[in-house]
Image 1 (spheres, rainbow, N blue to C red):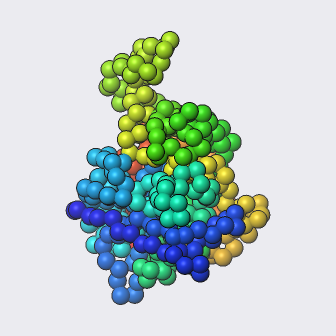
Image 2: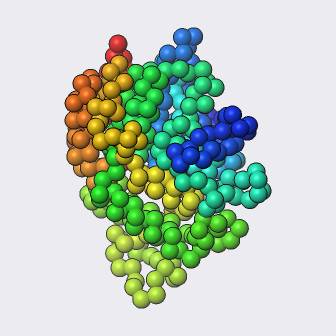
Image 3: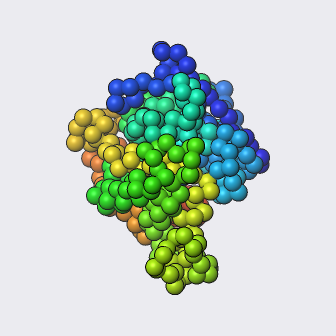
Length: 381
């Protein structure tokens, strides 16, 4: 199934600009998005998907190019990142449902972000792009939903960082979704997450080519982004899976080290993960999303620490929470906390622990472990 990204632009006049959490307004905003299936006459069969940190609007099928993304849209991006889950006859059946996914505001796959041209200056926004929150990302998509004619989604699904966005959407716009499925995610950033993310932020900021985000007309901060990705990658896969993937020879580029020499397949594998990421992602986008993750706390968005207050308007919603027992990016305790807060708020909630040796990446790799519970939730009256 070959698909193409679509683009929706708003905020070209003062009344329609995007209001940000820090009091600024921003426009114009373009969102790159894809849809699959058909919206029915009642407009009640739509499913919203929020992608993970380095994902895109391209959920399923084959998309050969997104010209607005340039060379970043390489072979790693062309097949939908959830192609095993979404499509005709699959877990999220596009013969029945109308599926929507948008690249995030701040992204680099066609949505307005730091690498986009600022119409005022004629140059890339770079470091002048506003520091965004996850609430800003959610808010940025509301005009798109209105444009598509969707008042209420049958369900919203988000995995990893996307799970945080799905919880933000469900709590702040409760009337716009009936079923909520967060996978391997949480309600707020943890101490360990904030430490890991600070390491990545410093790796990027200390690359001499970063130039406060204004690097598009010069050498890119590739070392900083590669190091940041290496720091994060170890949380995405289990050690068992990492060992199984160590097929690369012990090689290094001459300028990466002066004293130390790569000696093991593990070291070569981690370097390879950092290097290949450079070809498909923008450093500023990575930095902005990591910072948004670091500062995410759903209760704080409501000015409270009481999650019953957060979910007080969500009584009509059904929740399906997935946890992965080998996850060390979003540890199982985070989903247990999320589940407990939903139960305290007396919301219908099913909690499932997936037994897997794949770690956090299980939600990408093992559709059979998630299929039946998701189907049941989508069929629920």
